[in-house]
Image (cartoon, rainbow, N blue to C red):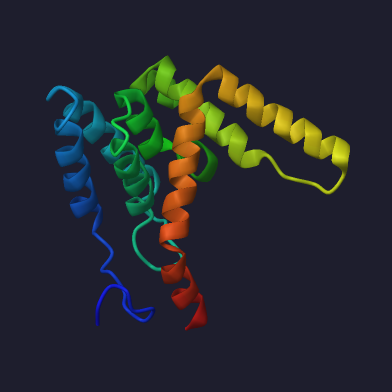
Length: 171
């Protein structure tokens, strides 16, 4: 069946394939020495998420790698790529912000912290609370727009893979 058919499914890349693709994309615009930092982030996140699966059944680590890959399309900087790979570690695993700061530096830790804070924003019906939540998001953007770029790539990957999740839930 052609890729335009609603019933067709694209094979989900393995974590290794997703990482290889990320390395290839990064090498097209960042210096060779950045690859070791990206590999360190991948190994760290893979270890943190090792027991987690996405709803579709694939290893969880494929998601943060895919988010990082999306960001290479806009030739984003190294810190943002590393933050994309690590974006769910503090929220969903035993990893701490202090560990991230020690292993990957303050800039990456600040990006991960911003992403963790955005994910915690809950929209309530109360208009005053809603205004406060928008204020928090605008402050996060003003502090570092890269936080919003990683967050948007995260949402984009989730939307691109929602059909896999729907199929998994239907079975």
